[in-house]
Length: 115
Image (cartoon, rainbow, N blue to C red; front, side):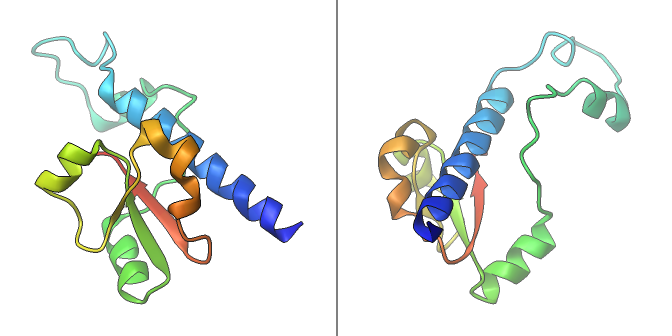
């Protein structure tokens, strides 16, 4: 049962990452207007409500990673990962997540990023 819950948690995290990456890659018409001076609050308001992936700030992510409590998962394409990535991150491209999710350790916090 525990294994099933861990697999489900990894799958849900992967799904959240895919949603966040797809939303980030497709600019919205409202936010893509030229010369628009939107406040941060207006930008957040215009976000897609489906993008509810949990967020972590850089300082907390670094602290967890340095303590050995977290793993970075780079969900970008392998070519982009090879150009530059966070040292120690593993590469599991978003489009391959369903096939490669077992490569992600389940005993640590998973911090996925795509940009």
